[in-house]
Image (cartoon, rainbow, N blue to C red; front, side):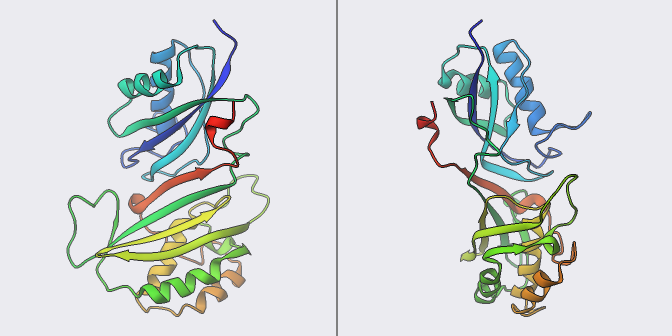
Length: 256
C-alpha cells in the first residue's frame, strides 16, 4: 500500500436524525457514517477530523473534513465511492489531496453559518426540518441594528449556553453579521473564525426578541457587557442552523 497521504472532503448533510457530527457511543452521528463509508471504500479504518463540530440537528452545506489514507484512489473516486455507501442525507461534494501539514481546524480563517427563520402565519411541511417558524412580523431593520453591535472582538460569554472543557477564552471576533428577508424567509448570516457553544442559536434567539419588539436593540450591548453565561437567547432549535462554508487562505487545489 502507498504511503499515507491526507485527503480533504467537502460534505453536505441534513442533520435532523443525527446527534451532531462527533462520534458518540451507540448514537448516530455524521462522523460515524463517514468513517463507516470510508472503511467500506478503502478497506481500512480511518478517523476523520471536521473543521466544525456541528451539534445535534444542525445541517451543513460546506463542512470540511480530512483523513489520512494509504489508498491511491483518485480524488473523484472518493466522491463517487463514498456517496455510494453514505445514507441519502449525507453527501460528499468534492475531494482533494492536500499537504500532510494542513489541518482543517487550525488552518481555517473563518466559518460561516446561516440560520433560517420562516416568518409566516402558517407552518411549512417542506421547510420544517430546515427552518424555524416565527409567526409574529419581524422588524429586520431593528435586528440589523442589533447585529452591528456584535461586530468586532467582544467577550461573548453571555451568548454561550455552556463552556467546553479546556476553553481558555470567550473572546470572539465577529467578522460579519446581518439579517435579510426574502419573502417569508428571514436569514441571519454570521462569520467568525470560531464560535462558542450554541453562540449562533443564542444570538438568533436574542435577535428574534429584538425583531418582535420584546426588547430594544440597545439592550444587546448590555447583554454583551454583562458577561453572564446563557444571558442571551433563548437557545432556539437546531433545525434552522446550517454551516455554509469554512474558509482558508488558499483554495484546496493549491494545497498539494
